[in-house]
Length: 78
Image 1 (tube, rainbow, N blue to C red):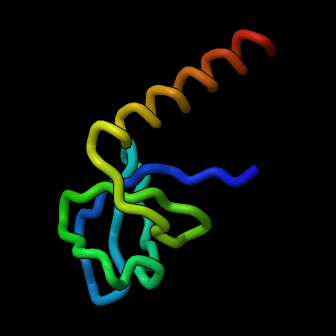
Image 2 (image 1 turned 180 degrees about the vertical axis):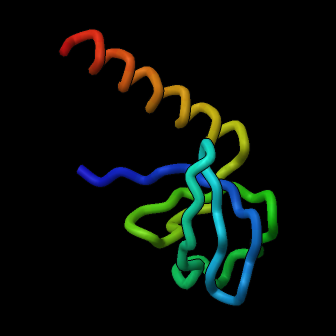
């Protein structure tokens, strides 16, 4: 199974973006989305350092809620 994490663009530098998710900052490649119009504030799904899809703020929030719920359930089962 592959997992992609939603992150928000804070700065774009060519085909690279500085992104943030819940205080975690990463530099990611925008190479796979080079035909997409991207700007600071946009949300992306990130997989192994590559932006693979642009998503809405609502989709990003929903994904984070699901991931948080998974962690809660994992901790409760341990």
